[in-house]
Amino acid sequence: MSRDFVRQICQPLPGADCSDPWGGGHDAWKVGGKMFACIGALDQGVAVKTSDPEFAAMMIEAGDAERAKYFHKSWVLLPWGGDPGLMRDRILVSYDIIRAGLPKRVQAKLPARDA
Image 1 (cartoon, rainbow, N blue to C red):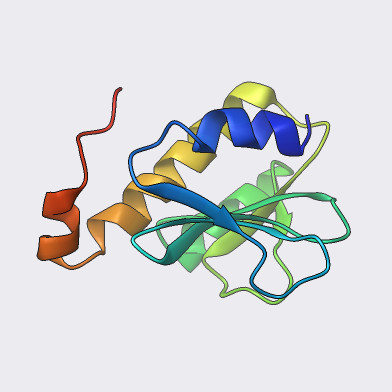
Image 2: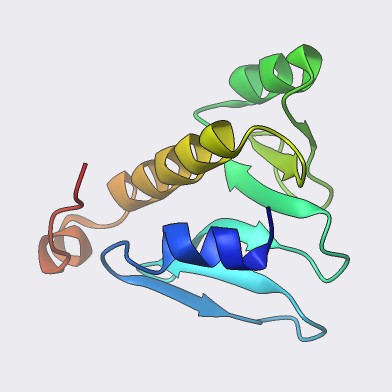
């Protein structure tokens, strides 16, 4: 898995946009200006939002994720080399969580996401 794998998942999502807000080679995937996935300059994997810190801790304890440095405790790092299906699912869940938290007027402008 790689940046290209993440790009293939994120790019088709309605309203998804990638930038490098800190410089140095980051991929920050956003919807409505809010980040839902991030690949750091060290390129160790992709950080995604989970529903809450408890779920993130469960993923870390199960060995499916690592603590995402510099992010809130509800974010995890999915390292390269893990299960591609899990990575895909967690990116999509992260997108849905962030999208659902956007103001209603911003959400209304976004097309529906394909399942």
